[in-house]
Length: 233
Ligand SMILES: Nc1nc2c(ncn2[C@@H]2O[C@H](COP(=O)(O)OP(=O)(O)OP(=O)(O)O)[C@@H](O)[C@H]2O)c(=O)[nH]1
Ligand SMILES: [Mg+2]
Image (cartoon, rainbow, N blue to C red):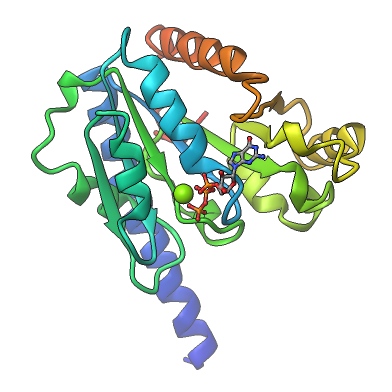
């Protein structure tokens, strides 16, 4: 057997293990009645800023919590904890994505039935997180206006593995001559009919629509049975 063949086999096993665990997590989340939303993007697109605002604004109505992954530091967990929601930081060391096992471990001690929403901020990276199912109900991919309209074409897998695209930092769109139509076209080229939301946490544009969207998706999940395969719809 060549070294190349062995490497492929090991990778397939890792993916398979992760998928099995993610499937079990998805069932646990469903049984507990918690709606799980993960967020992926390149570093600095605004995941933590959006999440802090979301945790704060949802709390009067919903019980919320968050997990956040980074290679190093507890910075994001400290920022999110300002919302008063339960938050745990997952430090991945050299690993550029979260895995289902990390999520499972981080939730130890939490009673999932006490939650309505659980948010998971992935490590800032447009490549690694796309291959790892975390058992979430909804995966959001963020893309800020300062990154360039071509990112969906350059990183199609992450857009394909997500359910919704959110274009962030819309308050900076004019300053960087962001071409909204081109960005939308590029997203639709890799993921036809993908829902796209425009948002700015600075100006507040799109925030209410985003919160309404989360509420609707959470309510509709309650009526949709889990597919046999356990794969994210
Ligand atoms: N102008 C503007 N800046 C924003 C907006 N959202 C976030 N930022 C800024 O963008 C920078 C990065 O935001 P973060 O929320 O830390 O981004 P992140 O995606 O969590 O970053 P990583 O966790 O490191 O991948 C910060 O300086 C934020 O203040 C926005 O809507 N408009
Ligand atoms: Mg962050």
